[in-house]
Image (cartoon, rainbow, N blue to C red):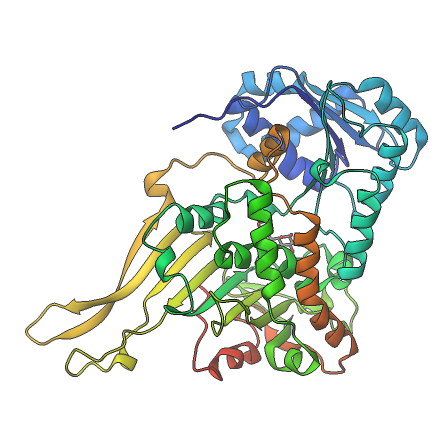
Length: 490
Ligand code: BG6
């Protein structure tokens, strides 16, 4: 096995360095990278934020949050190594002084991480451009990492791309979707393209349908203001669920390279059949949770959550039936669902194969057999399982469903991971495979835009489902009318 080498020397400038994302995920990820020896000796972090901190107080703040998250496991040497490399710059994101100071302090390779509210993405990049801070030279690269959400619909995503591509080249932009930082998500490609046995049956001749579920037990919590203006469709589908869809459905790329992989992902989304007005009513379901119990705990109705309007029609659940109009997938429905305050946390891709063509076994009608199913368990269980039929021991031929499972924990030791380690490291080494290109983002919005438009006009409210349930009944109907069923959320 080839071990990863430390990344090249660079400075990571984090805009929004005292925000939730930075403290909860980025800084602990840097600690984990340092612990694995993947950060170069000449590494520096420059945190930029408005609060009145200095290098010392910034280091203390980050030390406290990293310790809290890593519990007792902080290694003192690693932490000391990283701490000496953390600096702070107090500055407004829209003030020229901030960029003047950055110009004075930066040289060589620089990575700008925009861990800020989305309203700042374009503004910061414009100012970085005006200050000449993103000009690349033989002395170093200049790259920008942008967090989600990238736009709130197709038009705003295109406008943002237009704005930032006026300042940066596409190869300098790293648009994050944190689902691509998950090992089990990256494994979808390995499973499909590093093995000879799956790909020959991975198509319309053998697969009946695919289900993609991202179920969450958390409700809207303290994110009411953001969430009520966003909803489950925008928050989860064009990004996270479409990562799972495209990796499952894409053609093998011609090479394992960023552009080849990203082109195949865009092609799949472009082949998704557009839902027109009537099809939205038929193939898209929206729900909103009412009061209930999740894991024994009382959960208030979504409409009663802080910063949520009392007559909100924002969806906290969405289910879609999509068709992919290409040779591999014609006639194979992809059912997608995601929701908050559901019965269990469970992200999985269920690939259900067609039944055997013939009722060979006496007394065992083919329809009575359970289907062969491959399940890619993404989280919290990390596993891949295959369900098939086997003979139940005994004198009569009877068949029963059995399962073979590969659990990650049985083969690989779990390393502390926030999901951002690989993404940050890849950006440092200039590998954009796990990042979204402009056309990937826009292709995702293009698929969901008709649904957003239809729901914005609709007078039909989202169907209420009790917190702690599997979602609204209409979502079950979506499959039942096709003679199918969701796999239970557990
Ligand atoms: C975020 C969404 O992008 O992903 C959240 O804004 C959601 O609403 C989260 O809870 C889910 O991520 P994960 O990694 O917990 O599945």
